[in-house]
Amino acid sequence: MTTEIRTKYGFETGIYRPPSEGGSASLLVRVTRNCPWNHCTFCSMYKGKKFELRSPEEVKGDIDAIAAICSHLKSISHDLGYNGEINRNVAYALLEREPELNKTYGFPMVYEWLLSGGKTAFIQDANSLIVPVKKLVDILKYLRKTFPSLNRVTTYARSKTLVQRKPGELLEIRKAGLDRLHVGLETGDDTLLEKINKGVTGEGHIRGGRKAKNAGFQLSEYWMPGLGGKEMWKNHATNTARVLNAIDPDYIRSRPFYPSPGSSLFEDYQKGVFKPLSSLEQLLELRVMIETLQVTSRVCFDHAGNRWRGRTGGLLFSQSYEGYKFPEEKERVLKLVDEGIEVHG
Image (tube, rainbow, N blue to C red; front, side, top):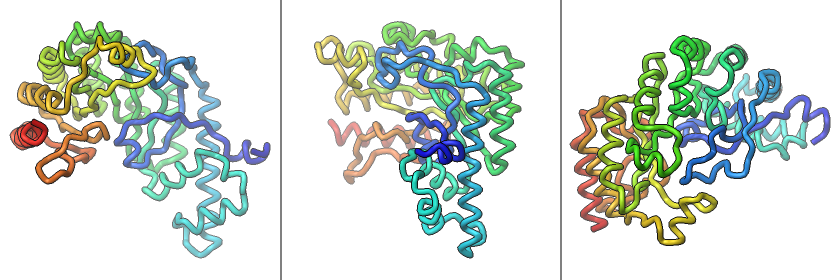
């Protein structure tokens, strides 16, 4: 990159975001780098990488750079007679004028975000609520002021951090413009939580989730079918449902467990210490969990790992980001699970 392009358009973007934020083409704004916990035995995402807080000045500089790209695209659109509409011809014209943008990984993301209407943003990386409250509020207000088209801003959060935050702090962050929290519950079983080194108990998950809901956040909780393996599957299913019942989040999202190279749980799998569930066993576990759920949540299967098949050979569950409304569609989901059990049996 030339110095001019870096000054005008350079900004930093992390790798990871929830499926629903990718599917809605969310703008990715990196407030922290990597994960402040980074001890979970099932995860390899940030292993070997140092956690860092980015200053509000850095992040605001990134927001300004993104705004400059948006402004330049809209200016070119008017020049070409498209009246501000963003399309492929406009993007190509900007790349011809500023060829160094071809080397940036952020430009395609901004382009897709604008094409989708510029409605959503995701704050990266793994646990943005660990940022000092005043600094996070400052960033959120600046983001909202710069991009008034945003109607949803979301981020990852840890239950333990939610527990540590005062109710007034969470309310201040919510009012500054953060709408939805994506929390990795993984399991509600205390023995399994300790085994995977999650750094929180089932009760901690409940307290954190309730505090998030009380502060007015939309709450999206992820659990991992198969995480307990053959040894712990039943307690995993029943205690996960128990914790989710106590929280009653807006969304419950299934992210099935598959051993990930680079994680210590993958090493246990290779040694034969961890015995993973088959597709059929995962569905049997899923049935116990769904049967035990007593929530008013939307239950979603929007992760690519939900790859069980139905009778027609297609995916068993809808991968809609809005999922199935409980309790109204609970029986429908149970029937789908039974269909999967029949197919995979």
